[in-house]
Amino acid sequence: MPLTDLVTPNAIMPALKVNNKKQAIAELAAKAAVLTGQSERDILEILLQREKLGSTGVGNGVAIPHGKLPKLGKLFGLFAHLDRAVDFEALDNQPVDLVFLLLAPEGAGADHLKALARVARLLRDPVVVNKLRESRDADALYAVLALTPASAA
Image (cartoon, rainbow, N blue to C red; front, top):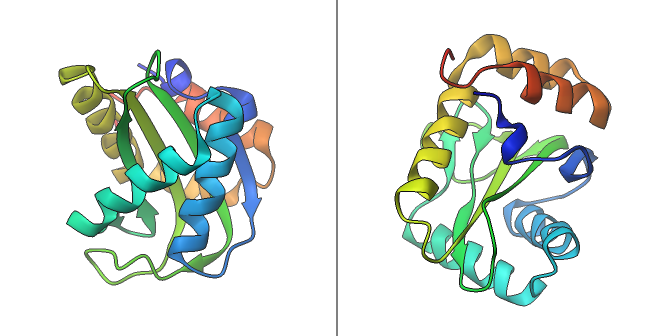
């Protein structure tokens, strides 16, 4: 199943310019707030709280910051290709340049975990990761996310 049910073409940031992890999360929260109509401050707070539990940098230059929002109507994804990799305190100590933000309604339960697993599975696939790194614009990035069945990755 492709990730098009989580991320829309306007939720792709092809060359996000940030200097560090906190700035990356803040920029993602700002964009997510615009697209979801949720409070930027609430989104940022939830993401930073999750990072305190442990980095969402999962390795191989990939991070999947995520959290649950009480007023969110459905699962929401946002993908960013960072202009240059930043330290995300990742498990493998590698800097991160690919970030998939996942927000879920507070009552999402298993759906949130399933979506998180799909994103993680997809972003563990070296072919997909290379295609994402080679893609320079939002349309190309979206095409990679849309065409790739996460269940096969």
